[in-house]
Image (cartoon, rainbow over all chains, first blue to last red; front, side):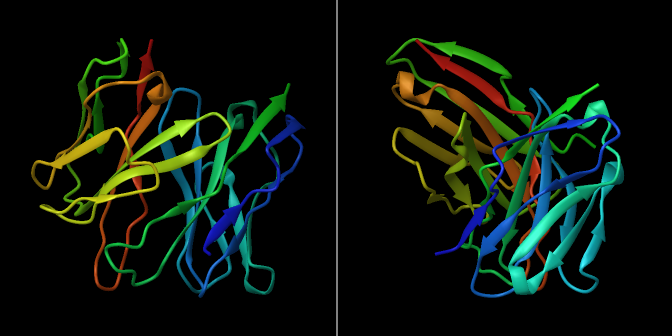
Length: 116
Length: 115
C-alpha cells in the first residue's frame, strides 16, 4: 500500500542550528514529492516540490530537500534554523499522470520547536 | 489573488445541529478536497471532487455530505453534528491535468467544536 512515514513526531533544535526532517515513502513508482509547512492556526503552505530532474530541490524560506530513490526518502534540510521556523511539517506524495481518483497522501507530520 | 477561502473560521455547535462549511477557490482548479486534522492523526481525507459535477468519498466520509456547486465552490455539510466531529477542517484545491498536477493549495481552516 502507498504510504508516507515521518519517523520523528517532534524535534527541538536551537536557533542557528542545522535541521533535517526525515520522510520515507512506499510507492509503486517515483512519485511527485512535496513538503508543506503549517504554522499555528494556519493552513498548509507549500515549501518545495520534486517532480523530476535534479534530486536536490530548493524551496522557500531557505529550505531544501533531497530525493534519494534508493532509500525512498525525501528529507528536508535547512542549514540554520530561525525561531519563525517553529511549525508542523508535512511530507506528501502524489502520483505522476494520475487519474482523477488518485489522492495525495500525507505523512503524519513532524512538529518543530526552536529554542532561542 | 485570494487562493482558497474557507468560511467560517470558527464554529461551535451543539450535538445534533447541522451546518455547512463553505470553500471557494479562484485559481481555476478542477479538483477540490476536504480534510480534517486531529492531533496525532495528521490530515484525513473526508471527500473529494475530481472535477465539477463529481464527488467521491475519502477515508472518513461518515457523517458528512458534500456539494460541488460549481467549479469554484465545494461545500461540506454536517447533517447532525457529533462531538467526534470536533476538528479543524481544511479545504484544498489543485489542478489535475493529463500531463501535470499542481501542488495542493490550502485554505486557512475552520475550527469546529461540537459540544
